[in-house]
Length: 296
Ligand SMILES: [Zn+2]
Image 1: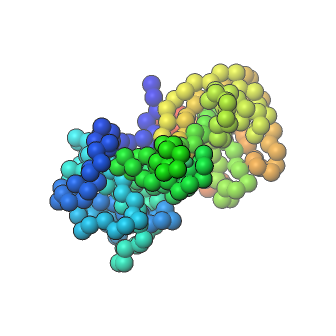
Image 2: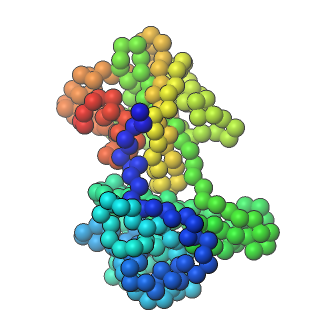
Image 3: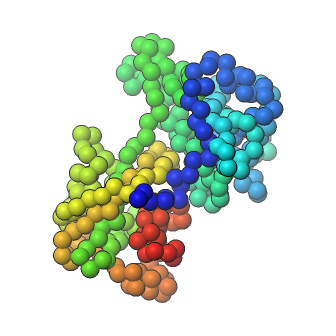
């Protein structure tokens, strides 16, 4: 069974066949049924005290603005309107723009789903402005989902960086938690790392575990995934097992501490304030709570 990870919640039907229609954005931006989200060029998203600023149509687009058709509300999503368009532009006076990661994790559905979708595509536009083949600045086409190079005609599609994250189990039904040197004090999480070119996901789980704690994984099972568009990752969740009850060995630089915890030991460490769990909304938190059988 797949894991039910906290950010894996689709609230929009991407309605991909519509994207190719060259006038789609113009038509949607003239339609009072359309709802807009706003982001600035630095990746901030417009919010107010209530949550995301979800606008109605407020006039013609300015030149230079990027508009992305995000899709149409899925039935049961509780979203209003007929269609959602993301506008990426200079900040609009009177609106506050906040970091998408902090914003998305603080929101509840369905706005969290909107913020994840908006952040994912906006961060691609932000970092992939030029053709990787010839260096020319590309044009946004296909309702915001393709960047076309005017010089060499290469079509560039949105990019996502796959990362593996794993719950490593020992023979005593304990799981491995590690403290990375860049974490806040007392924060522990599961091991994770980016997939390298040419590697399979399973190999990445084995390699990262060996590199980070010198343990040999003998079995790997895929569990699920969620977008982590801060700025551009896809987290792929695995269960992994080591034989026996080996001691992890850390390098003291990237990872400064690691050990296996039973459910009771983990609950006690959290209750005593000796250990801070991964943040709400993260894949690691969802995976640990699933192993625990209950939220912490
Ligand atoms: Zn080119």
